[in-house]
Length: 197
Image 1: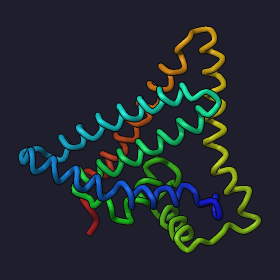
Image 2: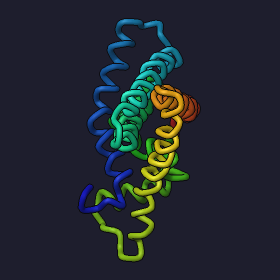
Image 3: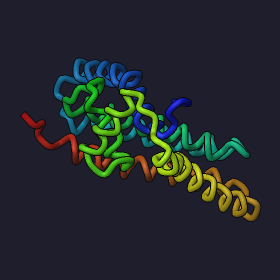
Image 4: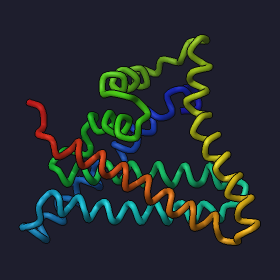
């Protein structure tokens, strides 16, 4: 990732599928064995509840990280979102360790507008094609934009927390939980559709 920072979202998606995918598959299998009558929607509700709470807790904890809060929150949110999407995939019978889940992660988190562009970016990341010089401004923007937005939001929260102590913790927790809820809704809608043949 350090050699090809322009592919950071794609490399992170691939790493998440590799690291989290098998655990999500095992989780779904254990829950189905323990509760054979549980349907996909029930498993999805269980996963959504778990990872929405995790996203909120990650945001609240990151708010206590001081100067490093934007980076800490971004890391916590990305981890919770990857877990959420891959567990929802498993709940709906999709293999969470399949490489297509990296495409899903990139589309559902709105890094890429569609599956075709996500697949092309993943292929380039796998081939370790460094962006050309003309591509570097775009690649740098892809990394800087989320961090700048996080930092700007955190700066406003820090100012507000001087007036209302603890506001940053509450707002970060609520905001990250709400973002995870919206992601869950998009993922559930996508995974409820029949799989293409």
